Length: 141
Length: 111
Image 1 (cartoon, rainbow over the protein chains, first blue to last red):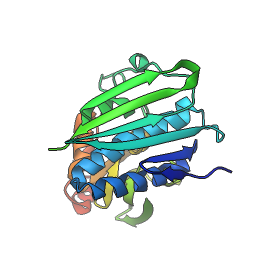
Image 2 (image 1 turned 30 degrees about the vertical axis):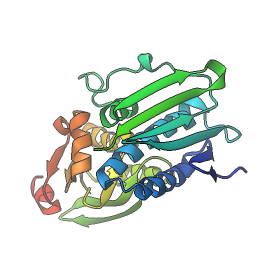
Image 3 (image 1 turned 60 degrees about the vertical axis):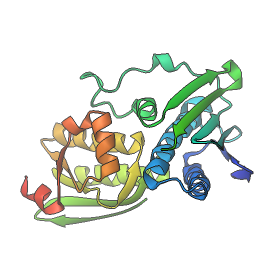
Image 4 (image 1 turned 45 degrees about the vertical axis):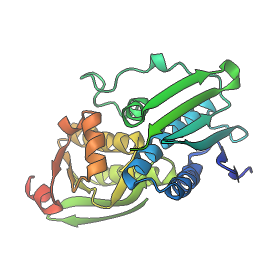
């Protein structure tokens, strides 16, 4: 079975949630190296694990032969994270608002809403059957 | 995430510790919460003091426990909600759904 691999600032994991802890450790290691405060690290980790969960479950359908890749880059006062899956694409406009009265008690469906609240920029780029690339940016104060 | 639980005044107290992000650890919290409900517990407090952060998976587990308990004439209350988690509850408007208390003792005495 495939295992997580790290090359430079990119980690690749098989499509299983058991590897979320590897993603979190990878992120924290790099972000602490940039001397970023703990609250911002938590915002980024929450957001990245949300998108990785979606990539594993909805993108790659938990197919262990498919991978999720997470890359992290610091540009001046901005952190950019790119998450790529190998699924069949995703249309974020189909996601319902989780804060309407009808949806408030739903157990799922809050992930993207939370990510958009915590990050400064969220861009979805569906590549059809070649997967989805999500770019997250966070300004450092 | 690690999870311990105990009982006080007939109320089940769950103490998750660490990060709730999905995967096997999150399943542990979901399963223990529902185990307690199945064994007849109707009053549950989740002590959030040692939770560093959670994502929507953790929120979904808390909602699942709350709705299951309410459907069985029970109630789930939160204690020691930290800044980051309070912020998530506010963003998602779940702060209007959960009753949160400053301490486990206050949460227990609220039943």
